[in-house]
Length: 422
Image (spheres, rainbow, N blue to C red):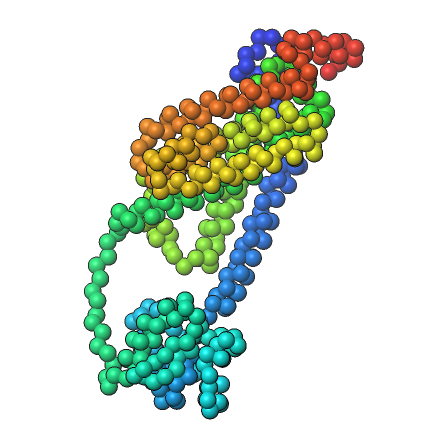
């Protein structure tokens, strides 16, 4: 603590001392270990829920078209559907005869459908020359063409001659590249938003803890408050990068071991995917920098909230509007993915909280790199302004001091009364 009380410490040096102290204290605490383990449980539960939900959805979405025609027509339709299914590539419905139609002399297909019996998307009645589809409007529009083609195949004396199509595959096209880059931008924005919201709360909890045990007052008496805030921000950012590195290493190890059991595509397929417009090296570098900026911007807001709050309950109450604001600016940045240069997209770029997300999306879609230098400078300016504003509020509301000199004198008097011990 002697170094921090030295008047020769510059703001940068003081911020470095605070950052080093907080980084080591958090990194080697038991709470950080539980923090690393914590997100793994939601991922595990989400994966299991998604797997079960997907299986249930696939089972529930099994589509059948019932046949309530004569026995011979039913057999002809089923045989024609089986012949056409490979050619129609999934557009042919699974057909089977409705048992109730064979058991009832005057079978009413409309009443049967309205009673919601069976698992039929539609029921086909009539004859091969005049088939009739009974079902909801959406199902009729979906299957009417397929039923007509199957009926034509069923009544033809010989199978319909289908010309063989020759195909020539190209590696990519402008449309497919842009669609892939938009998906890359969406995924990058979502990952950065989730990481920011998950990790930025550490800043708030750290400040609230040190307010409770009066450590923050000792730091404020020794060094400028904006240096304290900046040091805490960068310490928590460093801890966040450690957490991301651990999660990334675990994810990479799991993927290396179990990728063949999870997906059916090969690593060559991933290698052939079109990359972002700026290229993967530049995009990944920009993603790291924009995550840091998003974290620092949100963290500086949380520090300001800590300056306004006196209790943990107040911290939770005041942090909720900022969380909702961050969610709204994320939606703003996500809504402008395909409108580069529009007024709404420029607003998302200019607004500090949404700027990292909007610019990361632009890095995935547009190849220009020079615009990112100006955006990063703009975001860094707002980090400095928010840190300065938060430190001023903290000094005036929590320390009840208009200047660092009075805070230092009060701390020195308290130290003298305690016999010179910290």
